[in-house]
Image (cartoon, rainbow, N blue to C red; front, side, top):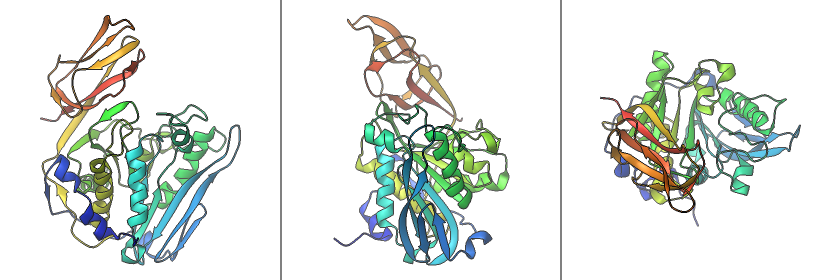
Length: 365
């Protein structure tokens, strides 16, 4: 079968805004970074690509106090100079929609039709994926999106974070970190805008979000400011002066067509905004800006029963769900602490005290 080019792929997939919002066609592209112009060869890990090539390789994480691992990477080095965009997924290996979306991008991108370079990392947390363990790396029990910028004398998660910082973050000009609802999370699509206080950088990351196309955007102003303690991948890029975004689609470990299309089309549209691909970027119209996320945690261990669904709007005090003991007696009622939209909801009945029941997005008025 002939491989799909970017334009063919885009015509075959539904626009994410058709599912989650309306679009308008206007975005301000950015000039090519001077540092990206002269690189005839681009190397990430063992992947070495000449102009016009797409090459795969690995970021090899050596053994230390625990096992070694190889993180797959693809470099699509455009025929023409341009920005360097990193697209990373699979920090949580059972957020499957985001992983499949990057696999689709790897197949679809044609370096001969591109300006600039795309670094694609489809699966950071290999052990999580292979063992079907949610949230953490089962090798060391740590989340692979909480230990950036990492260190080489740490556990596997910390060593991997250090090498991704060095090989991916430090070599890119912009970054997209893809996530979605894990096995126990029923999530509606949304993205994050990290506000750094640097006007020009924040303006570009905001435009990237509008081009990505998800119609709910969380304003995140509380991320770490210290590059040495950045914790999150996207924040690691942001604290190093690189406009970056996080986007989430997919729920409860599913790989539904609309969720995958939202992530693929979003990345392609950001590439158009950055002038890496021809065409005008479509921009989401009138997005919902979420100024705060109010979490609800369970005060009891038992069986969870939801009373709402992802994406619903709820009033303060509304019943979100309840927890029973193992013979059906209600032992806890979860109520919305504030009015807002259900960003995600517990997707399985198993509930342990202290675990998240739901996140409510408080909308900016």
